[in-house]
Image (tube, rainbow, N blue to C red):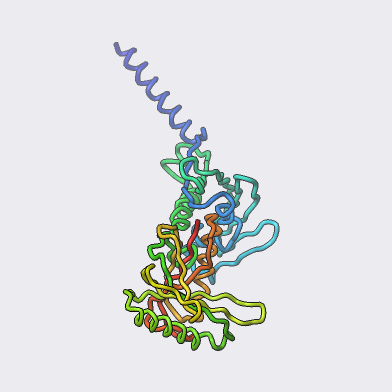
Amino acid sequence: MLKGRKFIAISFLGITGLVLLSSVSVPIQYSAQASVPYSLDPTTHQFQSMQQLAKWFLPYAQTNSSRLHFIDGLEPGIVMEDHSLRLLSVTPGQIDLSVEADGLEKQYSFFIRPDPKQRGKSIVKLSLFRTAWKRWIDPDPVDREVIQSLYALEAFTNDTKRVYGFPIRQTVLTDSCYLFMSETVPPEMKARRTSILFDSLIHFVHRSRVEWGGKRIYFEQHSEDNQLKVFTGVVVPCSIEEQPAKGFGRKTLPTGQKMLVTTFEGPYKEVEKAYKALEQYRRDYSLVSYITPFEDLLSPGAGYSPEDTVRINICSPIL
């Protein structure tokens, strides 16, 4: 009986010893992954551009940009005090990074593939081979930071304000008929002539005794002779009659059509930033616009001067 208990005890200790030995010597594979709302190329760009990488990769994303030094060349990178990162290679579906912290360097491979469940999106996966001890008991702080960076990538790319500087949303067109006027003017006359065109439109609507909710839209196009063609419009019932001879036209857009919208608030001279953000979003998501983006004026008045503080929706109907 005693010998049996002794055998069991020795066996238990032996098994425990083997488990402990395995936990510190035998690597096991584990992984983490992120869902990114872009196709493969824009997702890869998040790694290739050091400026983009610094917006979500830790610890750089939590550091004042003035403390970061960006390196160009065959192996671009980011340096910050005792922490650095280098882009080692980019191949279809794989990104290799080198991370150095406290004098120790480690390499990490990120694998990018289309999301099989969501068209136009990608899955970014990081696989690590570490011992059970390093995985659960004494995890490497750099490993932990890189994994947290992957989750930060998902949060970052799904936040349009952080990526593009403006909150961008997809909605649908709800207004179908617009009464509009247009005129080609010198750029310096834009504000004055735009205001006059809107006054004419509003006067015509009131005289026609049709319901008008106050919605005004505007867009412009540059001509080859440095002139500006401005388009002003008001949303009206489709029953209103256009009068081309007097300069009043009517345009119909299909209600229910998808539309990108971002809201700009600030000096009117900076509104171009919102246009550029909307255009970059459209490219990143491979969306096709079918008409020129336009401004839905939310602030009172019209014909804003460059210094006027305004609130405007920039709208871009898409297919």
